[in-house]
Image 1 (cartoon, rainbow, N blue to C red):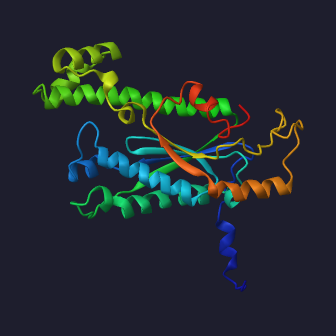
Image 2 (tube, rainbow, N blue to C red):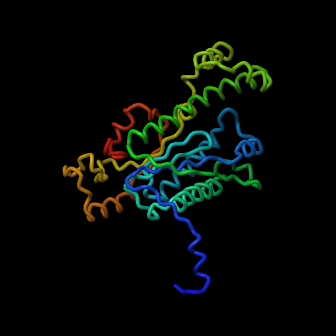
Image 3 (cartoon, rainbow, N blue to C red):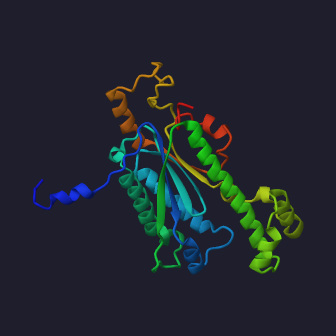
Length: 280
């Protein structure tokens, strides 16, 4: 690399390195998506085309970045989970965050016409912001995902009831807001069924539970080093060998990517897919 008198400016760069042996969650959120949804006439409370586009872009991210094991999305947000053994970009926060956000955004724009063939994109273009959160244990990580799914369910029940009152009940938005102020889930379910014959339990699982996209290896993985647990090789606290790590690296891109709409709060989902986080 050429040296010059200007090289000193590199000393002003700040590099934040994320902690080792922690799960990394990159959560992206649509920026000013209410303007985008209004401009392109998204259906309310849920637009199937928009949700499918989000899923398609997220699936592309999993294909592009092998270190991501799973993603969970609802509405205009997606959380991407990096394996705790990942050393992508030497765990530099800015590189990881910008790579995920830019990859997702580029695919969202690229795939737009496949989901909205009769509408062309024009400025302001879709954009996303993001953040990185580190979780030290599987329990913390699962609680995070449970939190996002729980929030998604609460928001969807509210939005389903709100838009039923507006679109089918003839209320103004301010009237609907006042009607729902302070109501619990049971009251919203009653409004939907009594007034509009809508059984919320029969609504789309995608709308109620969001989308979980994961890599299906179909077998138990080699394991992740953790001094507090046994490795899959049965040696307590020992790190995988270089050969094992190389095999794992080659196997990751070959995994099949699956999309599901199901409960990820209970143990059933995780028990049926032990390769996702083997040290539970």
